[in-house]
Image (cartoon, rainbow, N blue to C red; front, side):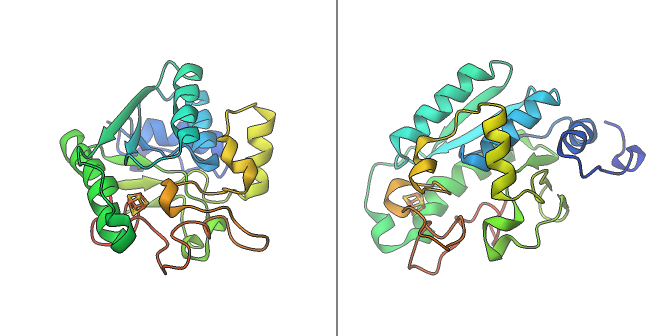
Length: 220
Ligand code: SF4
């Protein structure tokens, strides 16, 4: 692999940045929950020549529409390697009493285990700054931790994402159009109300904003 230092400076143009990222980190993989951001990222990556893994963690509690969106994307992008991970746990009601523990066991642990086996140097990620106050400082490239996080959509607004999805006729999760601007597991996701940020419907009322994949001691 060429040294990142030998690559030209990353462009803020998302397609140019993606092309740079794939060249600088050819072993990068892409976790995805197939939200609007994630679908735009998949399309950008495919257009830039990505043929790598798109990794989904099936917690057993996803909406049917999310699984259908994944299947639509698999059909649309046959050049990508869609991987579904599963914790192998029986159904329980831990999410009613301890969402941190439930996320850690059902979502974070399977992905951590998979990444430890694959050991990619970088992960492609679809987070953007305007999703929530807690994401307001996301850079294009995050160093530190076990691997580099590449965030080509960091600068994108929801308006940008919706326009891109419409222009390219992307298979957006139909729940999005019912106000589910960020979609996680069914028991822990509600539609967003007027004036709320895109992630306000996740673990609403619990003071929890992240599942633990991107922040905290077990972040990937
Ligand atoms: S989002 Fe809810 S159901 Fe899904 S893993 Fe986290 S706590 Fe469990």
